Image 1 (cartoon, rainbow over the protein chains, first blue to last red):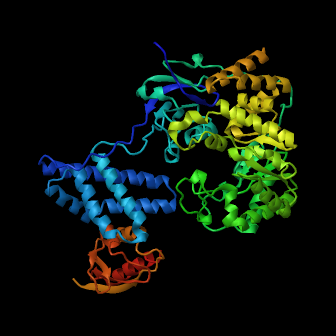
Image 2 (cartoon, rainbow over the protein chains, first blue to last red):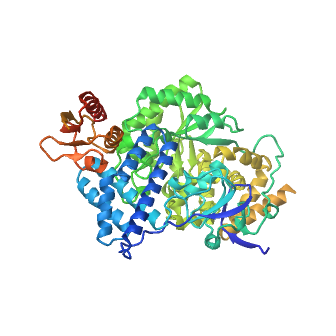
Image 3 (tube, one colour):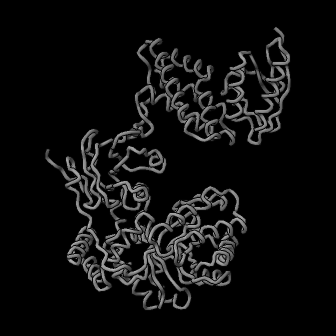
Length: 540
Length: 89
């Protein structure tokens, strides 16, 4: 069989071979149309579509918890409402085909219900029901309809959180046409250890049933390839028992902390506190914060724990903060900028952390996200020092703060670089825009140059520097970071072992050589291949 | 056939929404009886249609008339009590 190579950006280290399963594009419903005159046939079509959707709802209800099950049950009854069916039959009599007739009939009820805010969501639900029935009549699938058994590489444009929630155990590989290394798809695949290739334009050509090799290390998909063709990950062989710089773990919950403690992570480099509050509708009390922080700090792997104060905004909403919608949420009031309206909450976090620090006996560092000026850094440092005995720092993720690192001497003890947001702001490329994935590749020369400057400036100012963004989870890139002079990296939990091995396979001088190779690249592909070539040479 | 008539109150803080409507329709269908509901003094609809019930747009605190066609007063009362229970949310 002839092989064909499609290039993209790899996520993960393992390769996999399986059959392609193309996720269908959400096809728009056909425009309203009249039927051919066969009323009996149209009515039969309508009845069977309604029954089909009702049985789909039943199976959803079975999978859902108690409260949601009742909602699905209620929706099922609405669907089977005889007055609705009668209204749809009247539409058939007017000549509309079954799908259009059902949508029109539902619309008359939707209009009856409209104008009342408590029903707005229900109206969306019943319109969605009508859409499902029409889709079923026209043979259009609205869900991903992923197979439950077997082994498949699923291929699609990009996958939303609602899509990835539907991933079944049969999904052994993922290929997306759009999306970058920090897309939702990439993050989920990395955390679930599903081999993936994103930003793979050539994947448009893939068809169901083709056997493909998903080769993330080679940044490619090979049609007709087998696992024997997979690019070997540079097999890092640890030369010493200790990595050149410490490898910490990123966490967001008690479960993460417990799991991180089973890895070789040396402490925690990023504890995302907002993940505790994503569904909180009322502000967590000081006592509840003390309790959850104490449990989490106590469970963390040995070593310092870097806690980030709440990083929310209208793009990452936390219900109790009641943040208004913004035109450009990534450029809006988020991270430490919340101090203007929610100073008491940030202070209560810091005070609760101090109590938790004392109760757990752990070494706690605190940092603020989304700091754009030295003045903001000073404001945060003052709040943190007043609240407790912490090492105090800031995230470096805006280009502006890079130019003020020298002014942070004596103000903060450490900085931690968030490479995902730094890329987004440096390249003016929305992280959520699937067309801009290539800009967010960590091997982009301008990002490497910026990271290098941050390392140099921090060293000059006597400030400890670390990296906690996604790029610190890539073993080869972690070596580049060590070569720049960063003092530690923090990786996603599943990558701690691999990053630690990579950093144990080189000396400081060798890491420096790998960094110098990377920074000499003229584009991201060249930067990566030069760095990998240097690593192979060192391993010999 | 005689009809048992009663008044119930919507106590659910979010009004007469999909869940109680679904619960009532299920109960009505299981009973096999004809049951009608509507705002006191307004038009009544057959309580086997969740959309009809929701279209009343019943708000918290509003009273509804319930009519049950049956000879069995005890059964009617049990159904009415159950409907009142569903309207508590």
